[in-house]
Length: 219
Image (cartoon, rainbow, N blue to C red):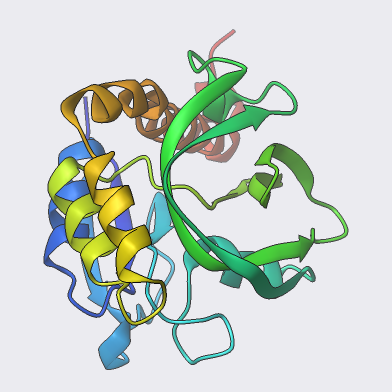
């Protein structure tokens, strides 16, 4: 079976963890672009595109993938009252192929100070918690605020790097909660990656059939 080819727009300022996490989780050939250095694809010849998270804000030139997608599609992003970080519970609001095999309520690592406050006009809310929108869909595009790609090492490094944004006491409390048990619970959200790849594969197959001459199509 031919592997899919995705563009990985790495918006992390220190992209090593991000690179490792997505290459581990996504079963496709990833062509990486360092968008913090202005490196962007000059064509759209990919089976899918993944825009990563970032410590930047949507108001900067580089921003979180979930949030920049919302803004690009006509939604609105604003700063949060506080900062959400750590392993937190998220609730699904409806069924969607991206969340197949994931429970109605699940645990995932979150870290963000901005939030989508208005969805794009044609988007559908897929997941949320009391801090705001955590997933939406608009056509063939999904925005995901939480981080199913994080391993425990990444969670610890990201948390420790937030000492300039939140108190040392809170950082230390979150670090204490990054345990093997918490990580195992968060792995429930990992089917999202295989679901995304499967959807891209189906979409590619459908487009291939639509381009075939009528005489070559399956009866």
